[in-house]
Length: 170
Image (tube, rainbow, N blue to C red; front, side):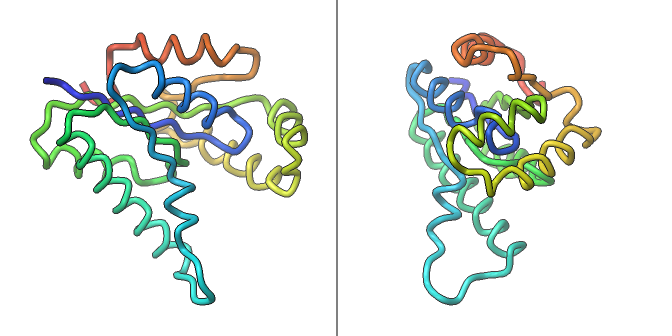
């Protein structure tokens, strides 16, 4: 049986959490993996360098995804993807599972991101969010996967993603 993996990326304030939670709940048999929760597992005084931490987080995203797929679950991942997509897909391909990978890079107009982040009270996240927006929008490989959330209702976005049967890699 074919399984589905949805990776929802984008900067802070774009709606990743809302969309991934709604999408996971809409699917018949699915789990939601939040990359930020894995990243937050690092505690204690000694922390790895950012690159090492990111690598470990992605290794864990891969392991968790494979385990859930092996047990018959579709997987929804909420995490920022910068350069990891090719590696992640190769990792999943090695499993031999029949997988359709859906990849979306959510975006919104800068003013909307600032407004949403300010409403949440996370104003310290605004510079990083705008930096990520610029980075993710300008990556050539992301162009076909950009999805504008600026003036869209989250339920409409969830429906559109859930009903899209074509994946990232045919």
